[in-house]
Image (cartoon, rainbow, N blue to C red; front, top):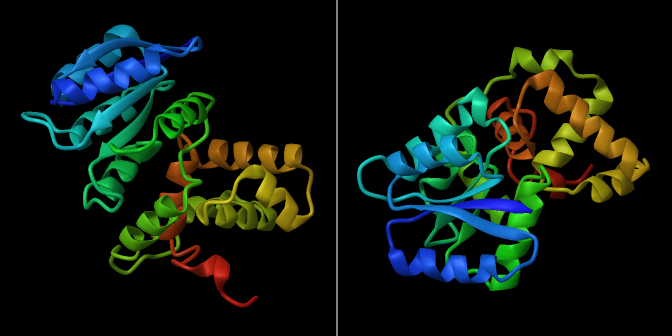
Length: 224
């Protein structure tokens, strides 16, 4: 059972999401919060698998709440998905940096919401949709004077290749196809990279790749 915490200051939004999620046999909404402070307390109390977190809430906003949850070692298994009104929101990249595993627009289709919850719950970042790639590239491009991070020195050349493809939004299967590897080998590489760099998930690999100048927006589509 995937346990979900809803955090949004609009009662109707929470009710709509709850109706969709609770209708599934493998998903259960365990708690609701109307502000970030309450969301953090409920996350510590219920230890949900996924938190659907609105950004703009009164008092403690979703960005700060995400930072607190991601920074709490006791909540290492809790994944945060940011809810935003627009597909490009000035807060979203900051939320990814704070530890969020991805984002969803609030008017997403029910089937996409359910898929997102399941994807994040199994440990993957919500990075596949093309709009997410555009958003990450746009906001990563705003990082002033990115410089190579010494954290990357522990990676092998192959691991650097894999990390760059993760940052471009490719799935394990797509990485395997591009590098002529088995999907299992690609997955092993990604897991080893996350362990070496001490990051929570693929979303954090994306942020680190852009901020360390490993790749630039549009890199994947450039002639090789």
